[in-house]
Amino acid sequence: MPADPPPSPSEAAFPESMLDTVLLIKAAIMGIVEGLTEFLPISSTGHLILTGALLGGFEDARGKVFDIAIQTGAILAVIIVYWQRLRETAAGLGSDVRARRFVLNVAIGFLPAVILGLLFGKVIKEHLFTPIVVASTFILGGFIILWAERRRPTRCAHTRRQAGCAAPTHRPRCGSWQP
Image (cartoon, rainbow, N blue to C red; front, side, top):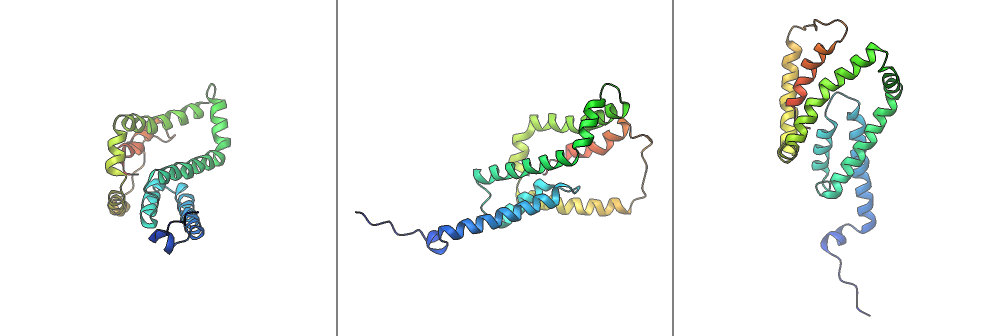
């Protein structure tokens, strides 16, 4: 009977049982980062990219699948939290002006990003979903927020959150292709 091959240097340093534990700890950290950032007005995807780069082991295809799975869970959590509002909106589309206005505002904010994403998605992902770009834009965005905080606040001319208020609010999102 042939002898087992000697373990590779990584297998010798980290036995398989320890690798599983390390991977589970990394996955838990990624889950915590996703959970903390999903409900805040910050980029959960960007934080996952940076955390994955810092932890290591999430750069391959399995890491991408993990990112998709963890963000799918976050999307389901958002749907659960807002389920009542989504159900009321869907039920009221035919008769409720507020429901139609809400859907229109979401479309104004969402459709331009979808169109640009479909047109340029591959280039965006290839060039902008890197840890260096994400970290740089986080820092730049921090300075922009500090600058904006010092400006005198302005109010939207529309008092009832009409479609005119959604466009200026969401227009910068189309330019912020960094995750």
